[in-house]
Image 1 (cartoon, helix red, strand yellow):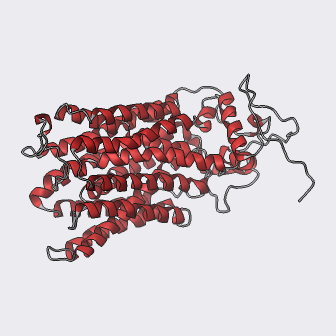
Image 2 (spheres, one colour):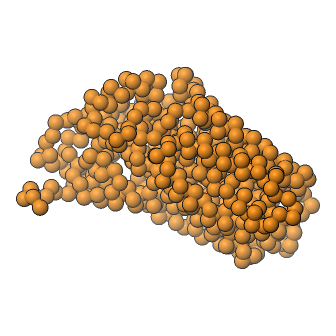
Image 3 (cartoon, one colour):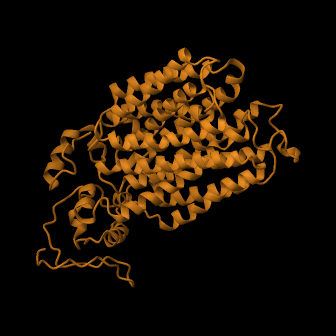
Length: 510
């Protein structure tokens, strides 16, 4: 070991809550991009980032459980003594009014549609953390609300509220985690969120197997909500967002804490070393900014068409896991478990083959798996064949969903990133509502063919669109400005001038 003395760990002044300066860390103030600065001085995947990933992925449990709870409450198997067997007349509401199944499940997606837009606006205008806290409050309140037997209208309102909080507990924490990671580490955020979402479905399946009374069932799925309070306590504002708003002092507080956890040193002149696009608070970028420049407009049109298709296919199969036959409980739990290796495959190959190819291949697998079921799955087909087909399709659909949550934020600059993802999530709810109508209303009347064929065809068209119209983003920096997207050559020259070295050996520009 060398005799060079160890550098002191950064600390915070307890009285002024400011970063302690280290005069011995005097370096030439080379301008570095955000990701390069984090990697070089704070470690881009140290203990702080590991804990952040775990904590910010944990909220995914809540929406996973509640969005799929109606599979067992309203399913044909009727395991929950709620609609037909409940003693309270307010809850005997679906047996003779089957259209309410579509209304109740669709109400969740309606809430998602509204919440995705509003939460994303709050996130861009007032900060990621505030939007997250609002989502947690709404989630806990509405999860309590649906336990109270107030009737169908009140239950639908509660479901809308749960859907409203969905983006703030899944998409938003993922964006917060992505903004603190370098390009080659972002896949860990998606993997963690996907695994926790899958775990939520498995937990729901085992709870449903207990065949509890309705209120007992609702209370059982409410218990994981307690975890959200811990997540709020640990969460912090995105330093990248703070810098884009000119709030450098607050960003410095967070950088100091990151450095302390990761046992590194924060240079006293860090503000002179990091490339900050805007030096003061900026006006909120309007939604119309997504249509003003050609490349951003094309990307936005493609992804708002892609997300509804992926949502329709994923939630359609998740809601009807016995679509091709088999036991609902076993298929649902297996469908949740298969999402974990699906997310693992995404993590292993998303950087090697790229986001675009990963999305293309997975959509093609979905399309051909569903199409093959029309040929190989009949009434007398062995149950294991049906299970394998639906699990392969579900695995591929999960891989697509996991990939687009990483892919989409990388396509847009910081000023509109969460807005773009939020609008995509809003459009995805259109696909969710249509899947509810098809699963709960059309399938009982016309059979599985009414969803198998549309799902297969739409997945195929979406795959072609992604392959031909979207760029590859693997190994690239998150674009900070519209200029970074519209004129990548200028961005490349600036990166070569400002950065000491690339983050990855194959780093390139969007």
